[in-house]
Structure formats: C-alpha cells, structure tokens
Image (cartoon, rainbow, N blue to C red; front, side):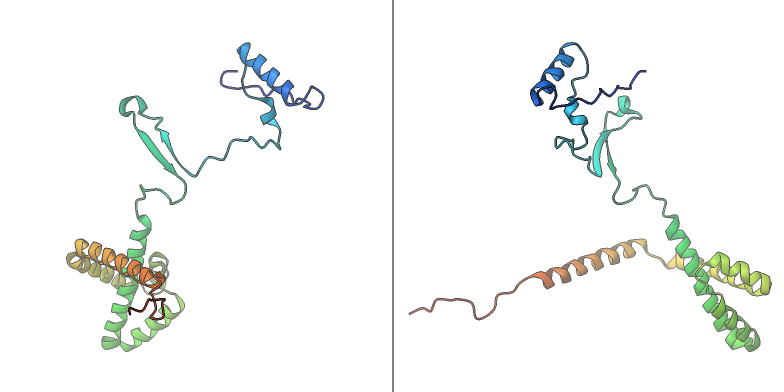
Length: 202
C-alpha cells in the first residue's frame, strides 16, 4: 500500500551481537534500497527517540503552497487569531439587557410603584445575566414589560454607538497596560540602601 511503511520485526540485540549487528542490518537495508531506519529505535526504551514536536511550529502551507510559497505559523497555545469575537458581542447584549432592566426599574419606581414591586421581585429571582433567557421568562409572565426592556436596550445601545470613541478606548487600554507593567517593574526593582559599602574620602 502506498505511503505505508511496514514495521520490521523486533530484533534480539543480545542474540545477534549487540549494537554492531544492528548497524550491519541497517547498512544492509540501506544498500538494498530498503528503509534506513535503525530497528533499535523501535524499542520502547530507546533513549534515541526523537524529541516531541513543540506546540508552536512553522510549516509550509498545504493549500496554495505552489502559488504563494509561504510559511504558516501553527500554534496550539493561545487560541486562534481569526476569532470572530462572538463572545464579546454576546456579553455586550447581556450587559445592555442588564442596563435596560435597571432603567425600566427606575422608571417604574417613579411612575408605577405596583409594577415596580412586581418587577423588582422578578429580577431578584431571575437574574438578567443571560439576556435571552431573562427576556424569554419575562415575556411569559408580563409581555408588556419584556417588550419595554427590549426597546429600552436597543435605545441604550444606539446612544452608546454614537458616544463610543474606539480610538479613545484603544488608548485607554494601551495606557492601562503600560501603567500595570510600570507598577510591576517598580515592585521588582531592588533599590540600593544608604548602608552600602562606600569608601570614605580622606
């Protein structure tokens, strides 16, 4: 079968003269066009095993290798760089649901105290951490409140889109990273003390 190498039978090293016999077998196999792999490397306890491949490696890209001729970096440590950030979008939706619930609670507290008490008890039992499940449960109990929360969270998201400055957000994250690294550096630096060995002049 093409692409399949047959494993040679295990050889008793002691019965055939030790390592010298294995070398003769290997040289004979290479001269006859066979596999040049030493049979000694097939034993489980052989110290000449090849080391494990690292988690990150550079490999030739199989697809389009002839057209691009480039190398691809394969890494199994830090996830995939082509993530779609769907988890971030889900967190944003959940957060705006939570913010809309707070807004509706404030409005009901001022305008409709009985509905406020009911909604407050409902929120205490059903936490709005998962927006979809929360709204699904709320629509079964009070459809009008569920629609109000959905409209409110859409309105709040529209206001946030207009006020969000992505350049400023990037700068804030960069500045905070720099500040944290500077703090860590200051904690690890060993400052010289006044009682160091100094030579007196005169």
